[in-house]
Picture 1 (tube, rainbow, N blue to C red):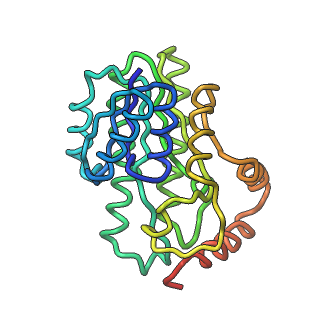
Picture 2: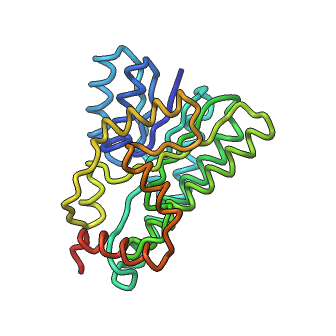
Amino acid sequence: MNALVTGASSGIGKAIAEELAKKKINLFLVARRQAELDEIKVSLESRYGIKVFVKTFDLSTEANCFALFEACKNDQLEIVINNAGFGCIGLFENIELDTELKMLRLNIMSVHILTKLFVRSMKQGVILNVASMAGFIPTPNMAAYAASKAYVYNFSEAINYELKRTKKKVRVLSLCPGPVNTNFANVAGAKTEFKGMSAEKCARIAVRGIERHRHHIIPGLGMKLTKFFVRFLPLGIILPMAFMIQSKKDEIS
């Protein structure tokens, strides 16, 4: 079996790659940083006896999404992990527009394009799109990021239902983690006192969710309870709570 993992040089993507490697699944690893990918390739091949292929692409560029698909379309992929993405924290009016547009291209456009292309080409298998708990509510101080993850979550749910109705043997799932100990905060320009789940634990839950045919995967009991109870709260309570939480992470505020 072969799997593609984007954003595989660190964090959740790297951890999911390791979990799949443990199951003797050959990997196509995608990120911008060649050196990090080469190190992961050597490590996984030596420890698990699998084949690892490195693909260096910046998926915030539309042409590179198509180029990645062309490079992998004949490799009989059965698992595609759309993990590449980043966030930016701060007041909407203060964040640079170019930064937000690059984020939206990576978080939304690349996921949309790759999901479309692989849904059409795969005969069977799973596409896992990495969303976020932030995608379940409007989130002041992370307005564009949360909206991008809401897109990924709703997009994946709808497509998965369509595929079930048409009886195609492809599933499109979403992974919706809360805080995870990755490089996300540094990239987003945030400081946080919240202790997140390890990327390794998040990856184990993600792969287990794929195996158990979950349509969306929320790592951790606390996050599952949060999603359940937030449905009953009015926006008048949710918005100031979210603003307060995100303001504590924001170096700009």
